[in-house]
Length: 499
Image (tube, rainbow, N blue to C red; front, side, top):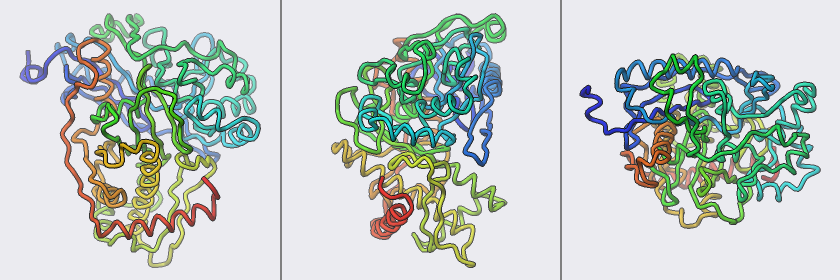
C-alpha cells in the first residue's frame, strides 16, 4: 500500500462531478475525503447563441467524463481495486431527447437555455402556476422541462414525436457506459415534472405539453445502483466493472452534503457558474414560498432554497468583453474601492432571472456608466449586485425557515472561493459571518458521502464537517449595502415589475 493510500481509510468510492464548466473524477476515502492526488478535471464551455441557446454536445460530455475517469484511475494505480462504488452528480434541469437506441436527437439543453421563455409564458397563461409550484416544487419557467418540452414540440415537432424518451445528462452517461439507467428522485425533482410528495411523475402536467408516459424515464432512489459496465468500458476500467454505479444526483443537493450542510442546522451557499442557497429539510407538506423551489435529495430529504442564473459566468463575461489581461489584477483593484462608490446600479441577469422573480426574459442591466467608469468599477459593481440578489434570496429562505435566521452559512464553489472581494461583500450584505469550505469540490465530496451511505459504509449525517475559515461582516458597510439594495429593487421594479 502506498503512503498516500495508508493515510486514507477504505473503502474508496469514485465520485464523478459533471458540471456546467467541467467534469471531475475524484477518488474519495471512507469518510468522503477527496484524495487530490487521485483526481482529474477537464474543462469545457457550453455552446451559446444570441437567441438564448445554451447546450452541450452529448458525445463531448461523454468523452470528457471518460477522460477524467481514465486519469483518476491511472493516478490511483493498483489502489483503484479498492474502489467499491461510483457516484455521480450532474447539473440539474438538463434535457436530452433520445431515440429507441439512445442516440441523441437533440443537444443537451441546459438550465441556462432561455429559448423556451415564450413557451413558459404561454404555459403560465393557461395553467395554474401556484398549484403546479406546490405540487412539483418548481414554477413554470424556461429552466424546467414543461417549458422545454413545449418549446421542443413547437419548434421541432418531428424530433419530439420520434423521441423514445426525454432524459437528463446523467442518464445519458449511464446508458452509454452501463447500457441502462434510472432517473434519481433528486434529478427528476429538478425537471419541474415530479410530484415531490408522491415521488412520482406528474403525468397530467406532462400531457399538457404533449409528452407521453413512456417518454419519461424510470425512477429510482440514490441507493439503486446498477452493476455491469458495457464490454468496451469494462475492458477499459476493470476496477469499475463489477461495482454499483449509483444514479446521478443534482449537484446542488450533493453540494449541501459535501459542505457539511446535510441537516437544517446550516445553510449552504454555492457560487460556481451560477449561484444557489439551500437547506436540507424533511419531505413534508409545508407550503413552498413564492420565489423558492423544493427539490429532493432522496425519498426522505428535500432541498428548499433558490438559485440565481449568474455567478462565475458574470466574471467570465466581464473578462472576455473587457479583454482583461488578468481577472486577479482587476479584483485587486476592485478590492481597493470603497463599498458601492462606483455609481452603478446593476441587475445581474446575464442568463435570465430565476429566484426570486423568475423572469426568464430578464437581461443584464447596468445603469450609471460614465466616461470615468473603469473595469474595476464594473467588476466591483457586478460582484455587489450578485451579493445583493443573494441577500434578497437569504431573506426569503429565512422567512420560510425562521430557525435559519442565525444559522451558519457555509460557502463553496470556485467562483466564491477564489474571490476575496465577493466573500467580504457577501458577509457585509448578509450581516452574518460567512464560513468558507476548505474544499472547492463540495458537490463531488457530497456525492462520495452519499455513495458511502448507500453502501452502508457511512451513516447519515456522520461525515466530518470540512474545515472552514470565517469571513466576519463589517457592520459599518451593512447600511451602505442596504441602501444599495433599495436602489437595485427600484431598478428591478421599473424594468421588470413585480416578482
